Every structure is written in structure tokens, then in C-alpha cells.
Length: 435
Image (cartoon, rainbow, N blue to C red):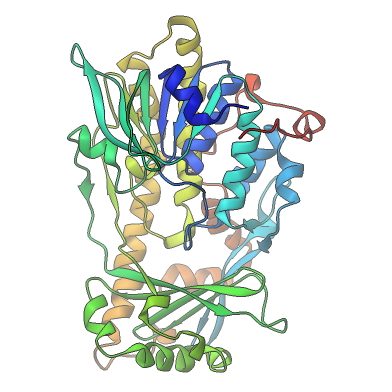
């Protein structure tokens, strides 16, 4: 059977070109294909196996998968569940969100390797005859005709061949370092952030706590995400301090971890060198305009999110669902999307994005930035300076359902359009093989 690249060489044209095979790109490709629209997703890498991607699948996305008939497939993936959000402070543990208070069938956040979720979506989309996924496709520029974007230029990273994919609509889902955004000359408005994040793994023992662990003390934050046989760890550092801290040697990080989370002391030596620690350059920004004639940007390409709350994937998927629902009828009817239709997508998704980013900015300023700064001087213990909202949540546990809903569902959850829904029995069949 012919390969994806062979298919592309025969017909390098699509109604919609989606750049980026992350959660937003794959969901958008799947939905548009179910609308019968010719859609091609260009993914830069050969596979989805990359460490330290966001692995949280929130309740609203779980509901979307059910609506698409993919709930059973997803449930079969190896996963852990996060049913509460807590933080360990010097004075004890505080609970910030209780997922059991969520409405609907999913009262948890699933922790699933992102590559498994993306393969599931790719398999479901491959069942649709109008869907094509091209891997190893490095987008290098935009095609312009009569003042509008008319597709993309891309290079096959395996052969070095250069290609042109013409499309009535190009959608950038290629993340916070979007090549499409740069090619379009669009610059987001940045919001200052106080921290960067070190990502690394530590072994997980059977007797360890399950789910997620957050440890918070003066000058130090660490979040541990349960991945079954190992912990995916996020250690927060002051913005721009990576080089200075690495100069102290990997032993300094081991010492900090052992002091911060004593039950990890017996395994911190598995961090052999700084090669085991990746830096996440935290950004928080947003485009003023998410579209141009023939071009739409969604997800991190339009609005990079802070890791606070782990909501970036949730918002990106919601962007994709809204875009598919609002644009598919016009694409089917006219074969293109007007700038007015693209503007409707931004109008719908702008306010939930701005709301979440506003909450993250408050968390940066009031909690994270203040706490990281306290690590450099003599200050009262963190436990004595808890923000008033946190103290209220401890006094009235029923209110823990509010942050749970904001994190796990979000301010404007999007649902699958009727034409994209499938019964579970249909979604359970095997995807046709492709080579």
C-alpha cells in the first residue's frame, strides 16, 4: 500500500493544511475529516515519542472522546488518575481541588503519555478517507497568492525533498515556537513569568503515593506526576537562573530534592548528570489577532500557556473543536473559509483563554514569584503566609469544587459537533493498515 509521502506527491493539495500533529492538530484533523473535508496534517517528527510533553487529559477532553466514540479506546490506554490537587507545605498538606465534586461522568484528570493519546487520535482519523497524516514534514514557509495564504512549503526530513502543499485554509497548531506564526510575521504579546521548569524522571516505588504530589516550601517548588513505574518531575527555578544553577553541579539538585521530598532521597542518585534534566522555558503570551486571510492559529501557536494548572492541552483541544464546528459548514459549502468565519473562532476562544491566562498571572505574582524570591532571604514560613483563597478552601471544602472545575473542565468547554460523533461500537473497529 502506498505511503503517506507517495500520496502527497500525487496530490499536493488539500482543502485544509494543519501544521503540527499535537493534540490540537490531531483533534482538528479528525473532526474535519469526519465532516468529509480533505485535510492533511503535517507533523515534523517521525513519531510522537518525545519526553516531557504535557500528559494531562482533563475531564472536558475525556467527555469529548466519549462523544467521538473513542472513550473505550482511551480507557484501554495505560493511565493513572488524578482525583484531587493537594500541596505539601512545611506545616502540612492542603487540598486545593476535589475532582469528586465535578459534574458528569469523569470526575478526574487522566495522566496518559501524550504519545499514546496522539496515536489513538491518528488511528481514528486514519479511518476517514479524506484524512492524510504526513510525518517528517518540516514546514519552512507559507505560500501566498493574491495577498492571502494559500498553503505551506515543507521539506521531507528523510529525503530532503522540498514540497508545496496548497490549501484553501492553513491552520497553525505547531506550538509556542510556531514556524507558521513566524513566517506570517505575527508577534504575540508576552506576559512576564517568574519561573522556568526543570523536567526529569525519578524511579517510582510501588509503596509511593499515587496520582500527583506537589511540594512547596520557601524558595522551592516540585511537582511529581505519577507515570506508573516512574515519576515525571517538575522543579521550578527562577526565570533565567538555569545556567547559574547548573554551574553548581548535579549534586546540588540531588541535595535540594532530598531535602524537599525526603522519601525521594534513596533515588536521587539516578540523576547521573545534567543531561538527565531538561529545561522548559516557560512562556505566557497571546496574539492580538489569531488569523489572516487563509490562515488561522490555535493552541500554543496563538496563546502559550504557563504550566500552572496543566491546562494548556485542554485549551488547545477546545480551540480545535470550536474551529472545526464553526468552519466546517463553510468549508463544505464554499471550499474555503472567509476571514469573517476565522474571526468568529477567535471571538469564541479569546475570552476563556484570557481568563485562564489572567488566573495564571495572579498565581505567578501572588504565589510562585513571591515564594521563589523568599528562598533568597529571611522571610516568614510559607505556611504562615497562605493566600486568603487557599485558607478559605481549607475552611469550606465544598468550595474545592470550584478550582476543580476551572482546571478539569475550564471556563468554556467545547463539545463535538453532531456530524463528528460516533457510537462506541463504531469506534471500536480496527483502523485500516497503512504503510
